[in-house]
Image 1 (cartoon, rainbow, N blue to C red):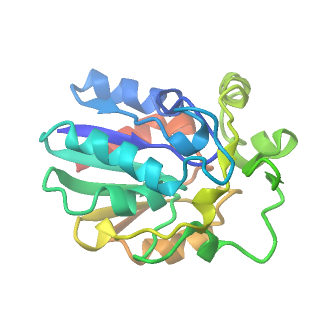
Image 2: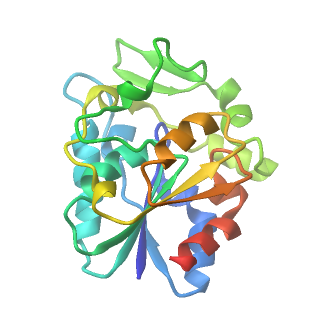
Length: 231
C-alpha cells in the first residue's frame, strides 16, 4: 500500500506540508508521494489567461497515480479534493480516498460553486496578474492556530500565489462516487468552516472528526497516521 498526498491551495512544496505525517507512515513501512501542482507555481509561473489551471493539476496528480499499480490511498486536503475528484476517477489502483477538511464536488462543479459572493477575508486576489494567495497577516490565526511556533514560521515560507483559473474550472468526474471514501472533519478549522465540512462529509462513506485546525497533518500527525493505517 502507498499513499499519494494532494496539497491544498496557495502553497508550494507539498512534501513539506505533509512531512510530519509522511515520516510517521514511513516508520511503519508505508511510502508516500506528493505531486507538484502547476497552478501553485510548482512547474513554472502561475497566473495569466494561459497559465496552468485545474486541468494541469489534475494531469499532475493522475500522472503520479498512474506511476504505480500498487494499491493506493489518496489523501486530499482542502482544494486538493477538487483535483482528486477528477484525477482519481476510473483507476483500479486507487482503493480509498481520504478528504481532509476538503471540498468534495460533483462532476460539473467548480471551486467557485462553494464560495460566497465576496472572497474570503484571508484571500488576496490580484486580477491583473491572475493570481490569488493568502494574506500573511491572517495566515497563522486562520490556518495554523493549533500548530507549534516552529511550524507556523516554516509554513509561512511555503506560501504561494496560485492561478485564479482554478476557481472557475469544473471537474469532469467525481471519483468519490465509485471509490470508498473517508472525510476528516477538523472541528477547529477557521479557514473551511466545520459546518461546510460536515455538508461535504455527507457525500463520503464514513466520517471521522478531529479536534484540530486546517492542517491536522502538521498539528496532529499521529492521529492522521493512525487513520490512514486503519484503512
